[in-house]
Image (cartoon, rainbow, N blue to C red; front, side, top):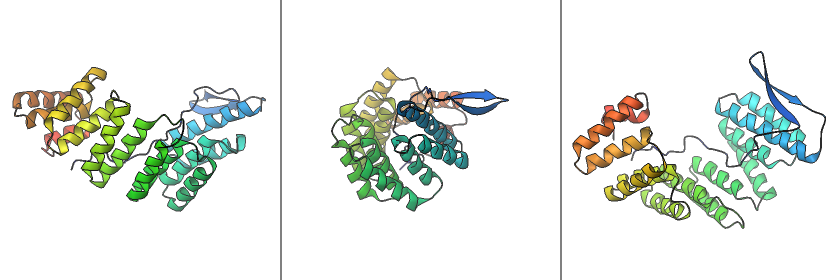
Length: 265
């Protein structure tokens, strides 16, 4: 099975505010510098902490773990109970391979923020990455039971990706269909469901998903790759070649282009 939706990276689910009053980011001599003011009210301290977490996550994505940790520590200095900072630390431990610390961080989050579905979604993604699949699915499902939790489609999508990484197409399809019941317009979810359909030779469902996708989004390398496979599966060789040519022209260095060139699908 082609793993185009593997759990190669884990994204934090929390939303961060774009602005900050206590701190602001400026650039001096080409370097990012954080400036502070003298207002240390709880509200502005929280904004400052969230801003530090935002910087930390970007640094982690860039592979600068040490600087990311420093920003997370600074965030907790501003706001010791900051949810985003504690979730950020859990992700930091994942990224640097401190698995035991990651477990402890998530367990502490579950105890302190038991009514926050984002904790369980992220914890489920972590457990899946550790191949603890049963625990992961139970954790995803628990997120869905939390009152006022609204990210149902996102959580079900992540559960589906977990099943996909495990090689369980049937479970992945079930989760994807549940996700679509909550949100039938998200492009990445439609691509995922189309990929799953192709994996079980359900060309008609794959074509329907891609028709919806085209209504809500422009093509990317993955959508073109899926479309060419749909046409090949339907015996429309000329149409398949058309999408293949577009893939090679627009995204020549993409993983999908390389798979197409190597006939690896």
